[in-house]
Image (tube, rainbow, N blue to C red):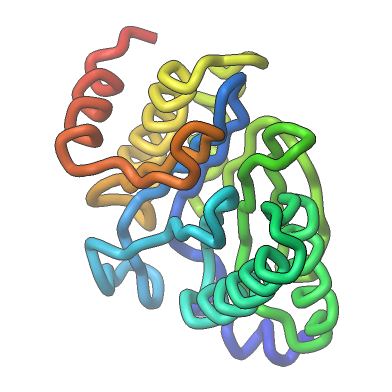
Length: 221
């Protein structure tokens, strides 16, 4: 295990800032779009880091993209099978627990990823973070990646329980924009998704993001 981690130090969670917030009427997920390859090299400026698992569950990823996408494929297949067999939405905890089991089962040869899984089910809205060894933690506000230290500074100062979705979007975007300014491995643009009972999983379009960024950039702390 440790040999693998040592050999892959150049790839280890250097880039990315992802943020997840639980709001009164939904879950918000925001990420940057920069991919870094070795310290200092921007490999790509428009990388997707938020994905739909199923109608009621979304996922963000930080770390090695291929490994995160492999986990996503497994989660999607099992979530769809669950829906087909049981004729109801899969609980968010079930998706998160499956991801945890996958990561834990590979703990001696770990996936180099950090994951946020969030969404809604019959019990309400939920948000979970997972590390490369499968540790599963539920929280109201989560940030992962190299810029998370900066993002948490904004989140701790501005997040409060039971935010409405609009305010939650503003807080999450401001957190990622702060990381973009201060973390060299975070940058370029943001992607935004919401998960609500009304609309399910939904990614915001370019105009909606542009408006959110303008509002967040003009916000007075």
